[in-house]
Amino acid sequence: MTDLKSVEAALAALLKGVQPLPGEWLVCEEAAGRILAEPVPARLDVPPFDNSAMDGYALCHADAGGWLPVSQRIAAGAQAVPLAPGSCARIFTGGELPPGADCVVMQERVEVEGDRVRIPDGIPECDNVRRRGRDVNAGDELLASGEPLEAGALGHLAGQGITEVTVRRRPRVVLLSTGDEIVDPGRPLGPGQIYNSNRPMLRRLLERFGAEVVRVAAIPDDAEGTRQALAAAALEADVVITTGGVSVGEEDHVKAAVEALGQLDMWRLAIRPGKPLALGRLPAEGHEARFVGLPGNPVSCFVGAWLFLRPLMGALLGAPSLLKLPRLTARAAFATQTGPRAHYMRVRLEFGADEISAHAFRDQNSGVLSSCIAADALAVVPPETRLEEGDRVDCLWLSG
Image (cartoon, rainbow, N blue to C red):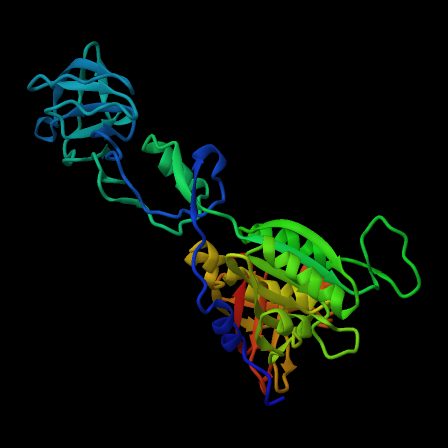
């Protein structure tokens, strides 16, 4: 076990020298979920003018505490005129505060009599007023490079009148499956065969991590066919991913093919599940594709995707939010004992009033894919550790 590498060492090897992919222009309506390639400066103050936070009456706070005539009516979208001294203005939510007014009293607090209103005492300056630039000031950085364009960010862009942005090109991924025993759903199973559960699972995770799967294919169980498949994949991909074929069996040809074609940076990790995981590089015309060889067992594949594919896509996209999974500490609602490898256990988190508890799935075998369906975290139990129920355990939050 002394030759097994840690997750931290593997990540360092995987991400060494990775540079963000080039940017491309995209209209904002099509940019949801993409990653900004350049910072976006604000063009406008938000709000662009002092405005009312509610329906009511705008006035100078020094005039509060008596009857005031209503000198104008200001709806949202209308232009206000200077407030006549000693008067107030009927104003509606979002309406522009007229020059000379510095506060708004809500309509429920006033007494109305014809064209005048009685204002209560003690209305403070700026009460119920949204000042110009309270959210954003023109010239400031609106969104940083690497920001995912989710709902709030897209709203921010729209609020500035921005219609196009520069986003990172999606990492192109070729996903290859090894093993003659693996059959695609929709085909009949022969003796000793199983359906390919890794491919759709990885495809969905990769899309979630911001990648574009440009091709999926099967690799034949022979050395020359494996080399040819990897070489062809490297020509069209930024990242080549295989499932299975990286162990030490006579039919496991991927590791040797990577060494023959390019460079193997890391092989065999001190983690459970997922020990037979290979990381390397495949040279191609004009670029170098990163290689990640995931184990064939579906849970090992699932865990490896979160630990390695997510940060790799984050580095290629220049997205800091993808480089590390959110980490939290929970109370273990289970007991376990680890050997020389760290155990990444599938757990379900429960958020109580005072603490978070982690509930492990009973069967943590690397072939039990059902443990990944409801798992929202990976509890990280270090090597040679005895964890008792009630102990604190670090968790990587998959849903965070």
